[in-house]
Image 1 (cartoon, rainbow, N blue to C red):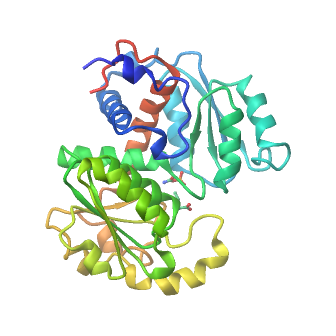
Image 2: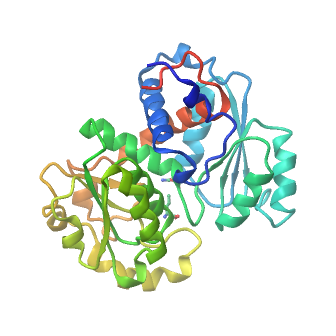
Length: 324
Ligand code: CP
Ligand code: NVA
């Protein structure tokens, strides 16, 4: 199906968290990503011809940085990167001034940063779309790629069940849970009380899932969280910028390692997912991440397709482009 007027409403918007998109806009981005995944290279080249994407990274990245740059090249545009020493949100100049300056040079901006609030100020002042390439609070591009991966495997999203095991307060867990619940996937967290989402965030998640018949619960037992689910997801125990907590996290999260025994309590067809980078034998056993249930490299590939879709949706009116 070709894009509708509602799809065109994405043009010019920023995406800092998953909830900056409506459930139907998430559907549009996934549909467009599916189309771009199989479209001929020559047909994609004109889509963002002459457009420039600025990428500002205060933290290391392999997948996000490379997939955005390759995506812009495949769409006929260009990407440039500034690293931490050249650019720190709010340190050398205010986030507002940096955003206003960059908006005069580039057509869209991807930012990977620490605290979420300066990013919000940056995006409010920018006059071009700003995409969160990971902050301490959210990783929306990862969550969209994860939905695409699940949809590719199960052919549907609504009605599935996903367990997130480990640090359930981090950016990946937050965005994944939002995206899943908005798509009708029920979510369970398996985590100790120290790493449990706040009650306020659990209430927010509950409200997101309600219209779609999806529920959310947090368990201290990993086995209870994972029982019979369709997807088991984990991430590193210590996120970037929180290295001082590494020892404490490792001790608290050891019982939440995803092992073959834990996977055996999920549904037989269950997928294992991880945003990468992974630490084998810490949050996940090698035999799981390198085993037949693992789709971690499909997730990494889908970052490219979904981010291309997001860029096209934010930078064009999608006229004549299939979105389903
Ligand atoms: N998953 C992810 O965002 O990877 P990078 O940190 O390598 O970008
Ligand atoms: N939670 C991790 C994700 C890395 C892609 C971090 O923030 O470091």
